[in-house]
Amino acid sequence: MDDEPDFLALVADALQRAGVAFTEGVQSLPEAEEALSAGFRPSVVILDLHVNEQRGESLLEKLRSDPHFSDVKVIACSGDWPALSRIRHSVDRILLKPVGVTGLLRALFEVCTSPAG
Image (cartoon, rainbow, N blue to C red; front, side, top):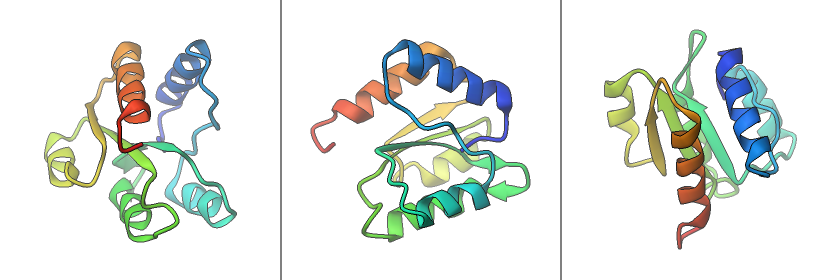
């Protein structure tokens, strides 16, 4: 979930080049919640902590509190280091923006190949 079209395009391009199956990113918290309520179950969520005026942490709380989504891997992205630091124990990886393609792919590879997942 991210509100920056350039970042969403970077993610989509990087995943496509790496041969990873993905679903286009959503740009708002309501869109993300609607997709989850409609039965979408991601393996990995790349979560921007500040989307427009919304808090990405609330989606993280939903994912972690719902047993159906508790094992979904979460990579948190933000330029807000204090916010990332606060949620570091609830996510699988942290990426400080600006995020490069190499860093993004490395994080995805690590969370997707970790023994727990």
